[in-house]
Length: 105
Image 1 (cartoon, rainbow, N blue to C red):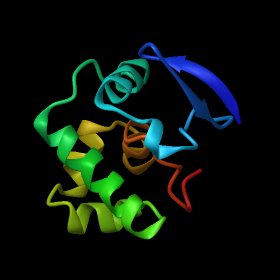
Image 2: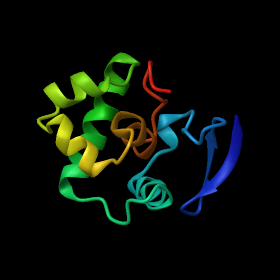
Image 3: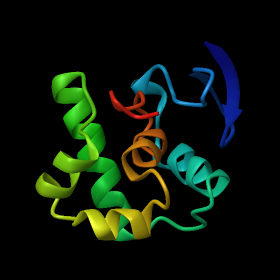
């Protein structure tokens, strides 16, 4: 775990840049992480996915897989890949300030 500065806030992250304490997250941090990962602006659809990921993680302690994310968030898997290129669940989790989903490489 390393302390790092994101959007004028010092947060704790793991070796891959995932926040280790979800309570340190805010929307400014989300926007900064998104920009660092090639998403210059978070649309309403991005926020829908990010909030779904956070809510699920905070309720259960686990982030949803890409399959359940596509089925339960209301955003089809194909659109998830358009919103969060290459690794949607992993990137949405990172932007949402939660740990990497189990099973993500």
